[in-house]
Length: 212
Ligand SMILES: [Zn+2]
Image (tube, rainbow, N blue to C red; front, side, top):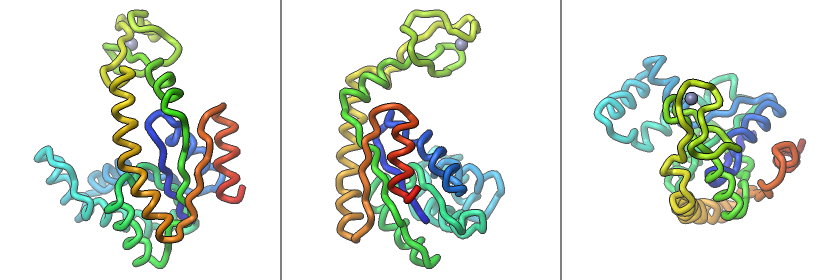
């Protein structure tokens, strides 16, 4: 079973993805992890990707898809895989469809984490970061001393200002709506779940969509 996760920043998609993967006994892979592993292993495509990264360029979709195909062909992923952050745009969805087809597989479920923008703004703007260690914290105020007693002070990153968050959410919506339309046009199983509420409740809803 191949599951593609989609969700706005702050919806808890990464954590939920790990929980779903653990419950199904399959790996969760994210583009960044797969890319780093290929570079570390020094595969042909990994070295190609590294050349782009060393020049400070974005690694092209075609190289990423090649690396993704090699990852999906690994025996560990035969039973299934949870893909986190792999599909953000329509060309990426098309590329993934091509790669899975070549492997005789397909995306079985597109799981979308839905949550109201206001709630995300509240969640994300409640985050502070230690100005020394760059570690994020929740439930504390900007100006508080770092709870790790490292001597740092908690600050709110520019990215976590409400206006910056709303902007990221607008970008997400603008990119994701066409991706969902594309999957629905392909007759894919697109399931939206309510991502508000406790982590456990959201995990239950997510697992129900994959038959658990
Ligand atoms: Zn600190």
